[in-house]
Length: 122
Image (cartoon, rainbow, N blue to C red; front, side, top):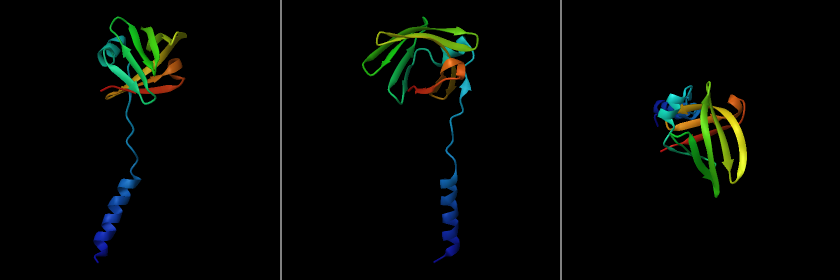
């Protein structure tokens, strides 16, 4: 048995196991123009089953399971803001930080200080 080759194979396989997973690099969407170009007109789906559509007329739609979502969005300073009704319940107005990485869109509620949710488009 060639222990040199075995040691090399173990070294290489250990390096792959120890390598950290590459995290997505999200870049902020800072303007309405960029949001329109990057996010509007696409179907966005979260791992939790939320579906969202952002429309050119500043409306939004989608849902979660059988719960229907409707609302309006606008741009306020550097924040994307929305007013949403989910299954007849008004969830109110919230301004969020939106970031993008490839086909993923990350929302962070409460001007970047709240819960985060990642959506994917295909």
